[in-house]
View 1: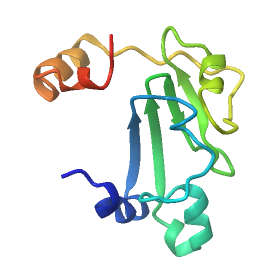
View 2 (view 1 turned 120 degrees about the vertical axis):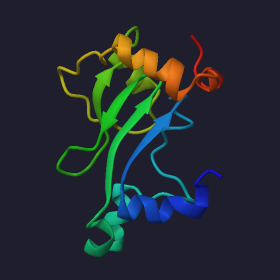
View 3 (view 1 turned 90 degrees about the vertical axis):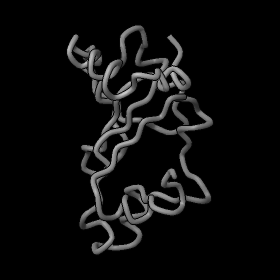
View 4 (view 1 turned 180 degrees about the vertical axis):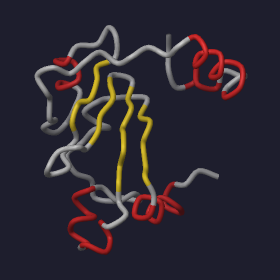
Length: 134
């Protein structure tokens, strides 16, 4: 069973959390939503220091790039751009102001051993291909 509304609230308050988002669009990366199941930095701050004490969203990985929240105000920041994608494409596909450093590097490609682990150990049935084309 996926976490969804059942487990995400506690997990995002008490554990380091990262997200994989296979479709980076303005309809997915929106400025604010009405209903949440996982707590973001804005809502954790609204709940006070007890809620924010163990809260950490480490990374968001999309089909366009890698992001973190390592800014003073915990705004989403571009960490790296996937090969073949431009910074402009990422900004255009994001429905809020993204922190874009002037020197965002290209995302590193997986090593041969990492590819082997993905293909042979982690996902030998190619389930990942249902989410990502190419």
